[in-house]
Image (cartoon, rainbow, N blue to C red):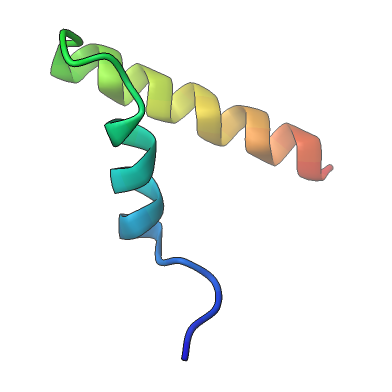
Amino acid sequence: MNIMPSVKNAVIDFIKNLPDDLTVEEIAYKLYLDERINKARKQ
């Protein structure tokens, strides 16, 4: 049993919490920002 969610599932959950009217570019940018913020917090 894998306790840590897969990257795919984490991205799906992240996208599900976004507004429905975003463009693909906006979603990609929000994913990018989220990843950068998470990396900065881990340092």
